[in-house]
Image (cartoon, rainbow, N blue to C red; front, side, top):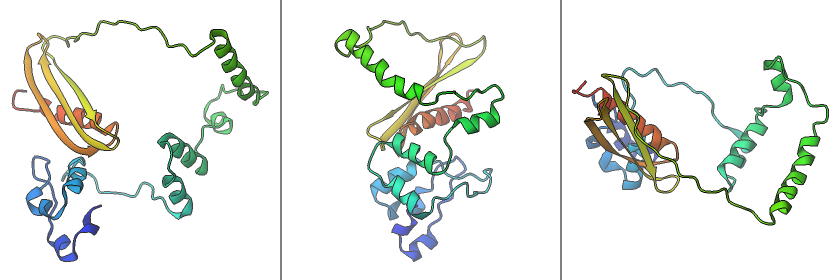
Length: 210
């Protein structure tokens, strides 16, 4: 990903295999990257010896790929356009193939035409957009079964993508503190911060206290 930023001689001498503990060998290539690129690498899980070989799952080619993913707009619309171009929408034809009890609507335009009327009626009935009433809920830690330990994790992100971190703690069934951690992910995207928190937390569960 970032090898193109390096000179050929540097890239050939750069050994980026991970250490036995699953961390990057920053001493072999960290000095070749700027801080922004290093933070992107830090947010990636290093390959491990027990991992399967890499395979090509799908490679975007052609002008349509570039047109969709270079479009400046919400990510959900880009995803929708990608599904449309690759015939991956869950249409009635697809549902008839996999759902034996699926019934195709007799008037498929009716729900679409009815939606604006329903929305206008809701607005006119209230006169303005109203917010749902606030609701207080008690949130508490639920202890695990006897002799079990429980892992709770969380992730935080500033921007998307942006600087991210994950943290968590492990407690015994009697609420006794067992272990805790805070992990600097680097530059990551929404969702990955939560996954990193869970990943590091599961690694902590295999610690010496087990």
